[in-house]
Length: 329
Image 1 (tube, rainbow, N blue to C red):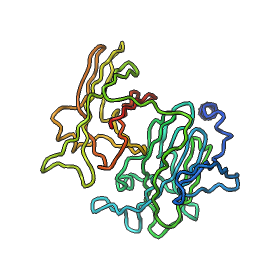
Image 2: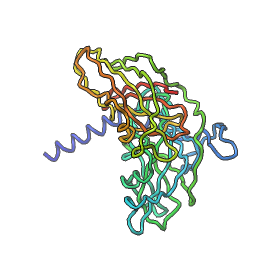
Image 3: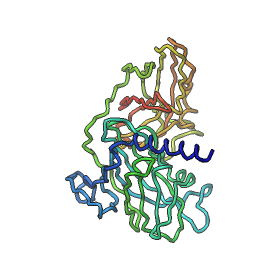
Image 4: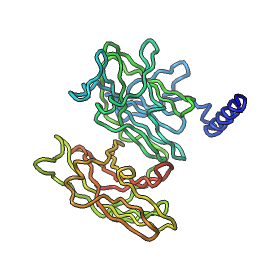
């Protein structure tokens, strides 16, 4: 039995190596930066293997991914979610882009860690993620797509100069290390990463077919809220009117709070918001759709008032690949 277990493990490792293919040989390369002096300069300045530590603001290419650490901070967490005694939250703001030919998945829990100056490793922490106030940069990333989010860690309060580590794939082959420095910093995202592919963006009113479903955004409104339920300061509610029709041959389940979200022009993700939904009279576009059946409903979100370039995203394959993007602005 023990020999059989070892053989199975060996087969899994071989298959995983085959899947990663030529990515094994690739090393991270700095292809630009977003320094304060010139945030639009992307001249190629490759690192050598001896220069393995990058800085906040460096634009780093590794395999099919482009990674940019925009900054980090130390949110207090508030009365209901404080860090443990002797600890602090450290939250990293980052972007990931797909410069390849195929989609890949971003899995922060498995791909992102911190290391302190002694080499001690820290995993992503759920309480710190909540304190960040943002979504993590997880999920499918299409060719030409950029996603942005924050990941949180729970670390000793007296430590600084952490190294953020990004594993380009789940085997740990292809690693990017970024020096966060001793002082919190925040940088504006680059306006253009010069990706080889451009996302196909549809418009409100267009009918788009994907995986046997036809999706159509019929309209967008901005509910003001009520005396009791209203957007938080510097935010606004958004209601998206969506219709989904099953034109396939089999039953399909539509779960809006899992499959539908918004993104802004930096890649920041905004998921279903219960408060926004509570001030919308109509229901969610959720149903088990028989072939030929359709459902229409409205789904609510909360976004910053100054957010620009809002895009509605429908993820047709929750556990696979297949997304569509519809511009709302």
